[in-house]
Length: 355
Image (cartoon, rainbow, N blue to C red):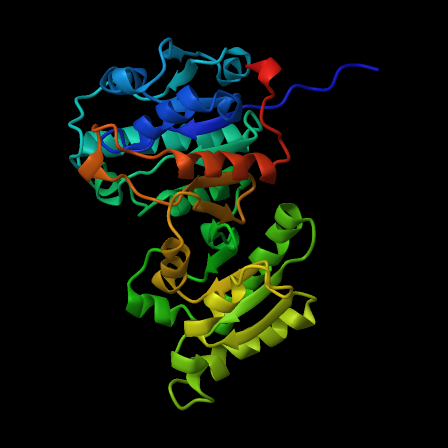
């Protein structure tokens, strides 16, 4: 009987090089070597080494950035070595400033990591924060990670983007929230609350939940309007769009219920010690869902994309240009994102013998 195949590496994109992405990556590798073993930074070696220089007094001695030509080399490095796969040319980057050069670096890293995942060369993708304006200046047509990854995956499997629906799930301990719409205006988000769109979101949650939770997830659905419309008094969307979607989902065996008043559903879903809470709350739009998640703090927040043909997670915070390059960034959310990626692809972290 042969030895089991070694685990695949996790691709960790550098994020916007003018933000805190490189810093939290270096801090994570330096101070949590076992948790980060097998992760490979996808980005730019010069940027990572410059960041290492800025952090030299804040990190343990002996930490170094090592260029790898093959992402699998990350599996064989020692504690203190940060593997970097160079996928984008050098460019001048000013810390804390939005630029096309930084946006291009970030996008190049995402494309490389996504294609590696689609080709089965990595087990998961963890993305450090990028800046949406920098992406736009770089000519990237997508507003963020989720839309870019969806397009790359659809191209790989040979289907239209609309035929590969994805959704964003934000989580912290005690609460997971999935969004019907993501990066659109509030007016567009309201227009997106249709029976078809809500039902499609419930189907994405249901399919993904089998992998994430090992069972069909229980989903509580938030309403759109105050008091979930109060039987049509404060809005018709619950009666005309959301309730029919929940009914159709139930007929498919999906464990959905609602719509519930959005001002209380998140509180009830995250009650500590409660016996009957959902696996996921479905929010109707971006801020409705993200505010209750982020009120619990960003330290353990994780963003995960549901519906992709590979695992993708991300810290639940942005580029933090205001503190970039100052050594103040906390890697806790990145570590939580790596842990979530491992759990989703059933890959344990390294033990001490491996580091």
